[in-house]
Image (cartoon, rainbow over the protein chains, first blue to last red):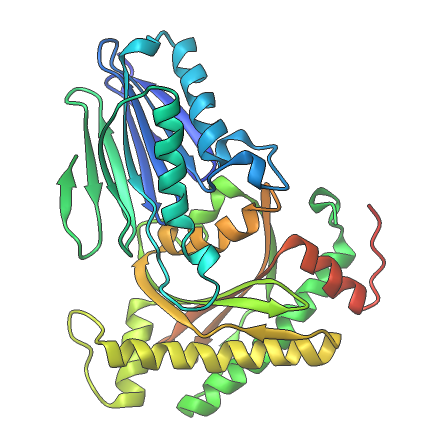
Length: 162
Length: 204
């Protein structure tokens, strides 16, 4: 079987069939959302930047937002043969990279992205199995489709699996 | 502005803006450390959002980022980035201390202040040139993965656009002991204001 590592950038999404891997390098305030069908082992990763598409003047790129990004990723996975009822989720990111008193709105975008992501997953009845969110540091994430574990690497804040 | 219709004239004007702003910022740094600083010709880049995280080398390279909101008539942000060695050298040179495994709070404040002086010079020269009111927020520092740091200005820009447009200037000290990058990232509506203020006709 083909074994690739797909890198997913901002406002982007990919679907991988096992044993191919999904990776996002340097997640800051964005949120990386892993969707995983445990049975077919098809995994998907969407790297969202903003909470809701209806809050933005420019919403043509669906993968930029938590709401439209997650539904788009589900569609991509179903096309590849995933089963909606087996899909679970794991999320990481949503940091506040720069702490400052000025302009709290943009500074809190990470937290807002996490809240929106959870709301959307919940409304779609997709279980959120684990998360590593918040803080003030970046994360590189790598999903292992065999074990279903998400590897989280940071600079100065350790390495872990969730 | 239609970001897909940016022509050579706009790019030349924006490059010149970068040239004037960075020239002032670099002069401020040079007088602060008493060394000659050179800069490259600014580049104006239009990128897809998914490409942004790699503009300072690999997305997981550690960099020092100093971030400012740009406020007033022109909105957006400014990011000043240094590699870790350059930041350590600056601290060593200015404070006479060797940087340990991590930067201390005082060392981080000093780096913020260096960024503040440079960004202030950059913005005040552009403000004079365009006659537009431009201010910067207090500085905020992050020493982390380049991709994570760059996501902050990218997110701000992405609220209004699917592509990102910015003016980048690389600078370096003569012996290459200090290397850094200055990014001016007005939001897309502010680019219009700047170009209008300079009398550049916008079509489309």
